[in-house]
Amino acid sequence: MMHQFRKKMIVISIINHILIEDLVFLEKYRHIYIYSTIVPNKIKMQIGRRHFIEYLDSFLIVLPEDYASQSVIWEDFYTYYGDLYENMIDINNNITCIKKLYSYIQQNISMTSMTKILDYGCGSGLSINIKSNCNMIGYEPNDKMRRQAVEKGMVVLDSEQLYSLSNDYIDAVFSSHVFHMGIKDNDIKILNKIIRHDGIIVANFYKNINCLVVNNAFIRNGFCVKKIIGFDERFGSVYEYRKKR
Image (tube, rainbow, N blue to C red; front, side, top):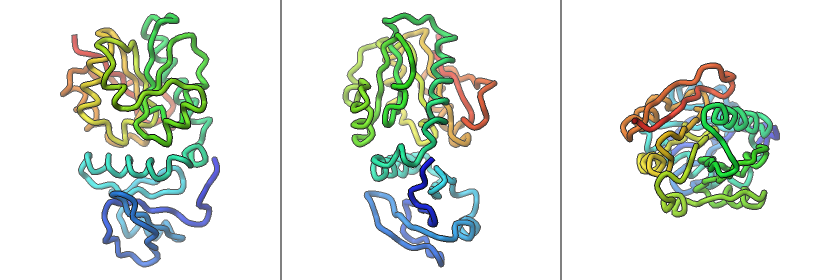
């Protein structure tokens, strides 16, 4: 992994009154305030461990309790840093996670060259590395990251295109390191519409963040939820979602 920030850590928040010594304000971007510090451990102690997560080795994300507000942070974060995405992540680790999620789908549905698999939140298009004879489709709402995926040769939908898919169009969905950042109720309703009746969704949660709130949202929108046992702990919690019969 390449570390862009080396000696400093970036602190991201949606509030502008973090008045802590050694925390330097850099700029406001849309809804988020961006700070830096060279003494991250001191800052962590003062913020309080319950209220932040360490992310990609270079960030402290200060999370509000409200799930919708968290979604705003993540959306703005990736809009701002989207061009640097592959320089910030462990690419091999992410590809391994994608392959494991995809393999789980292979083991649980019948697949042919006509099978349509949706990579929900495909980011920069790392799932292009999967060797598959099925029809792989990406969905990415972030313009910067969608552009990177398209440049890799991936077919990628934006939000309008996702919402316009016909009923039962998709056979299965996987989502790698996405659901913890917030999936809106409307998107869950769309997934319920476009996935076939016996289709499957499988997703992991980074550091187990927001498992309960997301799983409850899926249950509320007509899905059964099951935790999948046996995945490597580095990928967090992994869940399977199926339509209620």
